[in-house]
Length: 191
Image (cartoon, rainbow, N blue to C red):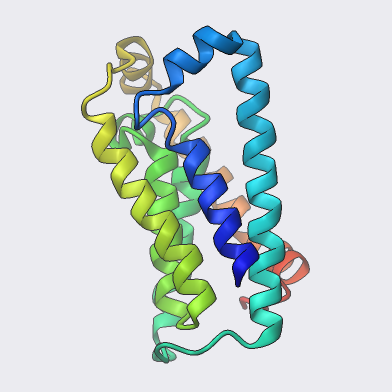
């Protein structure tokens, strides 16, 4: 469990640099590219520790805090479809992106909530609860940061076909994760 916690601290700390107002001073000191390199390396280290730590905690039998009802898995499947569409929307200008405002964070929040509904062990609570809490804090902090008006206007003015594209790609991602990637990477059958 210690590796999971260390990974979460490292990963969330580097992703909280902007929330705390340290991004600009760090980028000025390291240069924009230097900052990106440091951010990427630290993020990768945190992510690797999270993956290894979560795997070890599951293998060791993390204590069960609550037992989610079986029907909650159906809610999780629905929420994961929404999370997949929002994730894709973060990369493609569309009205979905415009209305979600920050679709990557919205996707992360829905993904984390969905997994909290389906998993009641301590490792899952630490992982998904921490990421959900961080995403909520980051979304609140975004309200105080400058808005990229050009990107927002581009997303609002996107053709309806872009919304269809986002939904089709999101559904494709969902199917790929549910039927192949989740069992292969996580070792848990979804369907």
